[in-house]
Image 1 (cartoon, rainbow, N blue to C red):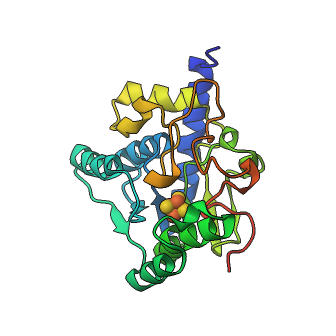
Image 2 (cartoon, rainbow, N blue to C red; image 1 turned 90 degrees about the vertical axis):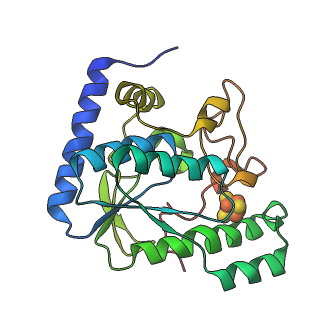
Length: 235
Ligand code: SF4
């Protein structure tokens, strides 16, 4: 059933812009962590058009789909702007691979979390160093672990504030925004990938499956976060 309502969408878009206005007024150092998913290309469009003072960065884990790199290039071409790309530390990556093997993340949750730490969490910590707040494209309906997330609030995991302007958006809202403004998006969405992360840990989902079922599908839903959006402090 299509849950999209133009009035509801207009209200949610206005709320998103109000949240971004508040954040820009409140924080001198505000960055957007762009995961290159559908939500995040919508935020890229809003930020690069209306909030150019917000810096955008993304993480290149070293295991991304080539389509993610193509999307970075397409977004930069479209808006004539550059996002900062953070990579994992070479030495930490080498020792991770030496320890658990090139695809050791399939062997245990501990291995998977170590890989996510080296390739995502540590680079994110570097990207957030010295910032007052970060913006993300989280939506409440994406995951059982995201239902209590506030629009703006402290992020104890990284010791700064976190701004979530799309919390109330539905998947239909996101795609309405993309189609209406003809925003570049990841071509893998057209191949059944609702949520796009590293190539070995993301797969397409079947019709009717949960939207995040394509991420770390070999684990329970409760463990399927990479450490970027945890509610507790990261060591
Ligand atoms: S998503 Fe997979 S490949 Fe990417 S950092 Fe996490 S475990 Fe490693």
